[in-house]
Length: 56
Image 1 (cartoon, rainbow, N blue to C red):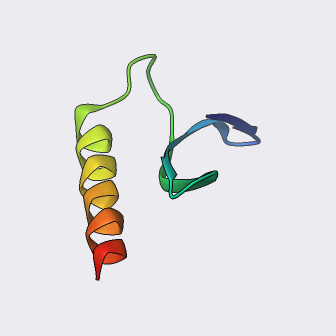
Image 2 (cartoon, one colour):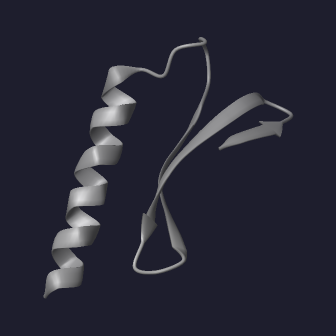
């Protein structure tokens, strides 16, 4: 998801969760065309945490 604001363009990383819900796990300001690997890794860790917490 791309968001435009006065500070520039932000990117939101999200995933489909339990039915028709979307869960936003990371939002950051874009500085380059490519999404930084550390942002992807952080989002993946948060997805795993949400899914793990849902199993409890």
